[in-house]
Every structure is written in structure tokens, then in C-alpha cells.
Image (cartoon, rainbow, N blue to C red):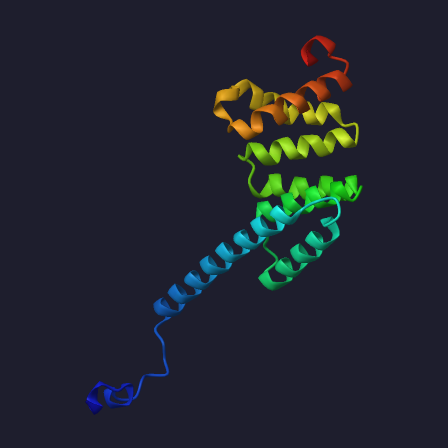
Length: 167
């Protein structure tokens, strides 16, 4: 029975092979990312006009815990939403731009960035983001993004003076 105990197996080497260390680091990074994404999703569920400041504090804590300066696009996007609710349109625009930069293929981040651009009366820039999404076809978008795309596209076209396009 004694030989089944860890001490009976002899001393463990204090040197861990580099490949094993890299594997452990990769696993730790993956776990951190999953936990971060889950926490961001929790914060997003809590977001209201009254909780926006608290959500920003939670995002700041997550960013600090990450330690390496990286932050997922979903975090930047949630920061932008929170800032818009607080009336900080310029800072929200920067946050949405960071989300779009982190995941340039995401239609959600393009639509949100366009909405922030519209708050700054930058309708031409908003149209430049929205028209390619519309050109791909509504069927290419998730159902939840179709109405926001159409609404933002109509608003941008109207602000740009393209009244027929806004219909």
C-alpha cells in the first residue's frame, strides 16, 4: 500500500520540460479568456441606465486582472454601451472603435460603431460601415442585427441628405 503514495514514487524533478510549461501557460490563458468572456456576458446582462457606472467598474477590474493589456472585443463593446448610457458619446465611440479593431469581421461591432458615429453626426463614416453589411444581404446577418442595421442605415442616409435611400 505504501508504494501507491506519491512519496514512494521517488523525488519529482524540480525541472519541468519547457513544452509542458508552455502547455500549462496556454491552458491557463484559455481558461482566463473563457472566464473573462463569461464575466463580460454577466456584466452585459446587468447593464441598465442605472447600473452603467457599476458595469464600467467591473470592466476596469477585469481589464486589470488580465494584466497583459489585452481585452476582448466584447469588453470594449460593453464599455461603449455603458458609456453611451452615461452620455459619454466621445469615449463610447473610442470603445466601439476598439471592439471593431479587435474583431473587424463582426457585424455587431460595425453596427454599434456606426451608431456611435451617428451620435457624433458623422453620418458619412457610419454609411461607410453600414452599406457593405447591407450589400451582403440581410439574410447573412443574425436576426437580432437586421433591424438595428436597417434603422442605423436609414438614420445615416437621412442625416447625409440621401432621403430616397433612407426610405
